[in-house]
Length: 332
Ligand code: PBG
Image 1 (cartoon, rainbow, N blue to C red):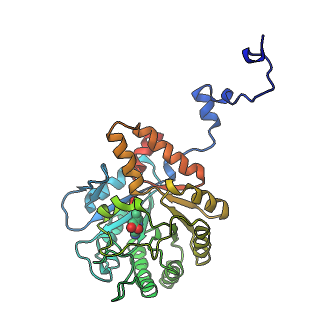
Image 2: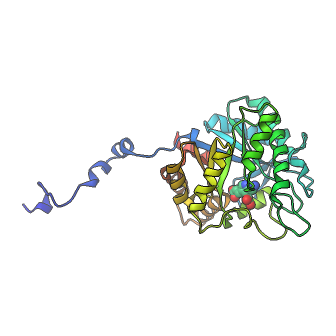
Image 3: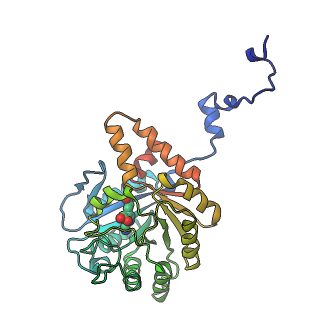
């Protein structure tokens, strides 16, 4: 008998031994995705009477407050960790007034969901101005068309208070202004929201993968792009600097965004910090898989679970994903 036919063969290791049955693979899986790790991004739009489909994100809708309430109950039922809310107001202006108006759509929705669900799901409020400004930028803009950092911080501080008052459990600033976490922390503390955590979109890249979201949130910039405030895709060390800075300013948890094209960043951040690290699987990541699946080019459910596993494997504890509820059901 030659060694290749069996018997002792010191020349190679038999990695296949632990892959031979589904039960063995399940037992030895190093990474698991649990429904509780998943956060569902949702859009709530003012002035519509029925949920509206989003063309570039099949299966995702712009909600009415009522349809959102129903979706939130389904999400709780599925056992996911939480929701992150984006508001789409009927009226936009230069400074994004509807973001912090008490009767602004996102604050109305937060109040209703909190009253309805209590603490059953973690309700996160995305804090940005781009869905609320007429120009579509994430901050206030000078006459010369520059996004003006420090005046924007005052707006963010006010929005944070409005969202906390409306019932948000977590404030998640995504505008990538310098000093935004410190400004928001100070504002929350000044109004006795000392216990409201901040999840900082710390390493948020200027990404082509946000395209479908801009249809969903109706927040595409009317001029220019976001490259002067969001991070440049070639940079990795800078992500660690942004994360450290946000933690120094008082962030309780940090996020990397997008997820799949930035798994190296997720891994480095997860190694570097001892706070929860989230990754946002963004609209373009969703749309790619949905489009390929529609063409019969990819096994949709398998691809969904594989991407979520990869993001967790890279080191993210929580994953924001438009598939949160469906994935939670698949994982059960
Ligand atoms: C901006 C914001 C964006 C996303 C979340 N928050 C878009 C942007 O920066 O242009 C993108 C999310 C996605 O693509 O799914 N506040």
